[in-house]
Image: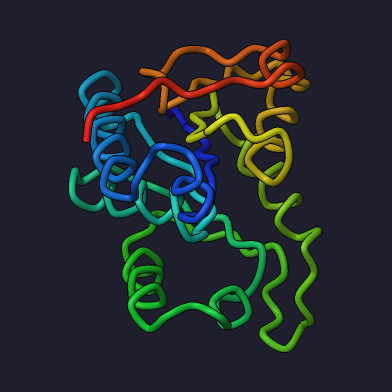
Length: 183
């Protein structure tokens, strides 16, 4: 089984670069389709169930009939407390279609703790063969830390926003500017 961990920004982080959500969704769909073509039924995506890249890749997995596993930091009730109804419905659909679900903190009455996101990311990376990042070059936040963790643990990391080009530690330390894409 080839497991691919996905890490990526929330929608607002893409907007501060030159990407719009439609472009990221198209890249997510293309990425899932290409990997399905390469790995066929041996492919499974590890998704964090977060707004942005996670949900967009999840939608692409459903569209392309590709297996995926959800790794949630909290019970869905806690994770989606400030989401719109549409966003909750998207996660609900993915919860129903997922090949498996891991919840770091399953208690629905627990208090929010940002550290659960880091635990979730580490578990997704640990279980993966390699990592695909939807990274705009930010040197902070969950996407950055997930890539850093992956590279420190000898996992290959590829940037979906740069044609699946490998990301190396030097780029994490020095930053990276995504190429301009057509709209």
